[in-house]
Length: 309
Image 1 (cartoon, rainbow, N blue to C red):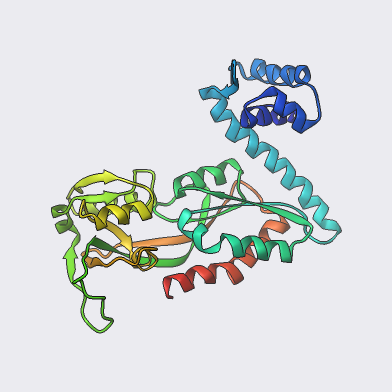
Image 2 (image 1 turned 90 degrees about the horizontal axis):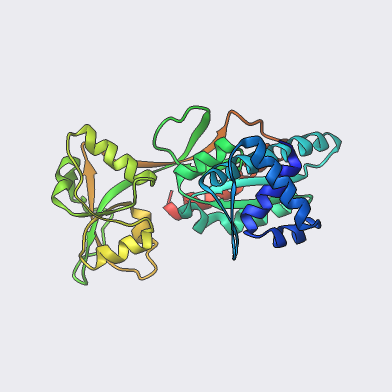
């Protein structure tokens, strides 16, 4: 395979059309079709399924798409790394972030990057921590800001913020606002099995961490609903459908300013850990190294302020 074949395949797969891909790449459809077909022959897999509406990746094509994008980005990084020998960092910086971090920091991240690196460009991908790990391994992103749950081979992580997790239940108008001086009600982790939980799906970092801690206590969580979006979880908790395990930041940032019953979980206390992660498989460019330093010094503090730390 060669880079032209990979570039042709990526554009056709992502745009869903040979016609649109040909316009984007300033070439013609027969040329693109030949490149994709050559790639399929060499890989011995059909990568695209042709239909009347365009094309869609086959299961093999979906897998190959991630690898192809990673290969092209690595080649781009190698080129820009050499270009940086001549002066100001340029090229492309790709970062993956979790939805909770994205809400607080995306705008400032982009503004600071464009100010500090006017000759470079940035792409921001948002996803669950599990997907961010995959994107790091594939080389689709240079760095990720994610929730750390388990050790991952070839991924280097450094914790930057720690948040305690609480049992969140429905409140009402009579529910008093939490007083900083008053002791908070507590519950043992093994006792939360009394409550139906509204919790993210198995790919979510909080779900994996809570289930793992419960398993160590020899108990099984009572899962009522699986919902990934924090705002939707709070809606359902507010309606009395179940309880959630979330940070205090989730309730204090509730747009509707609703009251919730908050109970501290003990034995053990649960924490989520936000970390900066990179892949040891891929060498960071000068641009990526400097952009990560900017992220730590000017953007991550915004998240800390949102947490009240």
